[in-house]
Image (tube, rainbow, N blue to C red; front, side, top):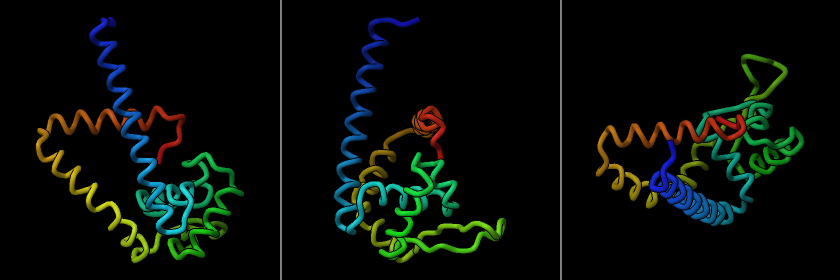
Length: 149
């Protein structure tokens, strides 16, 4: 049952999520520019960093990019020294894309201050509150048109 108070909470939550996303996009764009990447390239790199590795087909599915688009992104990331292509031990017809740890360390350094602030914020949260927040984001990520990693 929806009440006006519950509807107002939902609306307020949507506003705060939109603010968070907008801020993250602008910050991520600034980081990408610092490393002479575009935002799409940097987010593909982010997905690879989060998942450890992926085939080009998996990366296309996770991003919604075409296979040709992924190839262009990977060419740029490889040229810039952020990824390497390796034979896939599970399928000799495909490749695995992995990040280059030394290059990723430079990008991770850009997020150190934000990560420290988030750690401080989370330190004040109970384990139960953190479980609720994690659960919310897991559900939200699953709800996004199947583009999950």
